[in-house]
Length: 123
Image (cartoon, rainbow, N blue to C red; front, side):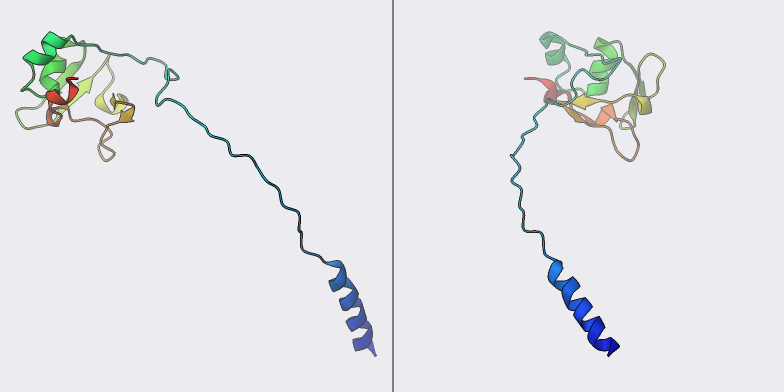
């Protein structure tokens, strides 16, 4: 007898449960932004003239930066690491951005300027 009551109650509850059939259509939103906009405090751009770029065409980027900019390049010998030091900060505290992409080595946290050829910079 209790089984019949439970079956009736269960069937009433199950008939009241309905799946949600409402659908919503959301408009497509495109978000576009330039990479590395001026949201970074202390952002500094170094511009080197084309004559200097042509003079250092066969050299590495570390040679060009140490001769033509205010960046101190710590060079540990030919074929070794060349890291930067800007205003007392070490190479791990300096983000090197090329065409909007951070080119720091993810394992070291810094950029080795001796392996970047200078001819990539000439337009």
